[in-house]
Amino acid sequence: STPVATFCALLTAARIGILIKGGDILESLGEITAVAFDKTGTITRGEFSIHAFHAVGDKVQMAHLLYWISSIESKSSHPMAAALVDYGHSKSIQPKPENVTEFRILPGEGVHGVIHGRHVYIGNKRALARASSCHTAPEETKTMVGAHPKGGASVGYVICDGELVGVFSLSDDCRTGAAEAIQELRTMGISSVVMLTGDSAEAAMHAQEQLHAGVLDEIHSELLPADKVRLVGALKAKAGPTMMVGDGINDAPALAMADVGVSMGISGSAAAMETSHATLMSSDILRIPEAVRLGRRVRRTIA
Ligand code: ADP
Ligand code: MG
Image (cartoon, rainbow, N blue to C red):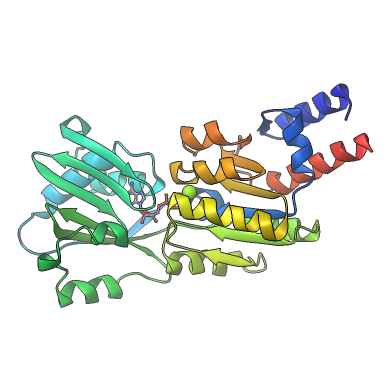
């Protein structure tokens, strides 16, 4: 398209809250035939509420457990981290992130930190697998985990020095407009709309149920960052030019792999913003189909 038309379209995009890193990206937006959405923080709000929290075994007191968790999670920007820190606050726990060393983010799994000499992992099933086999969850723990997740909650585990010491369940709701955005993309002729998540299959199904008519073609769960990259690659090969929308550090490589990677500017991670081609500066996910439409208009002005 002409430089002026492209410039005007970039300004229009900015006005509706989408920052696009260049005119060529705008044209790629108009060619999109498939869209992959991350779940947590993209389709969902990323505002978790904790349903249940249990200390496992009698080695660790609840107050200590919550103090470790909130101190370590204060160093994480994951949506689940904020919920856990808030939960600690609600129980009058003051986090002390300055006492945490060796903090590491384990994408698709959770976080790790050392606090007062103890190695603590907080995360999903993958984190649980770090508990040494001789101390695996007793039968009682398994029923506890199985019992409290209400309708599609995610289950989290706390492992201290190789032993399971805590279990919690938490859930998150879909963003307003998420179902409409998916329907809109279909109406526009996008042939494939899929969800890629690091979260559990149960949590992914729960999101699909909330989306009602916003039916997804495929749902892939329990993914590592590399799995998201592979699946975006597969979608490109199968369904053509692909857009990926995501917010997390775990989404960054997949955003780079997509023909157009779109990050979430307000709640998203810096890593996602850096590797993406465009950033949504609001929580209004309906701007996604709007951006594709804008890209199509720009392409028409070339012809
Ligand atoms: P998604 O792809 O849905 O955004 P992530 O890859 O960020 O999910 O996370 C995958 C899973 O790892 C989460 O569902 C959660 O169980 C666990 N996890 C990630 N970060 C944390 C954290 N800071 N605290 C606890 N659990 C975490
Ligand atoms: Mg996410």
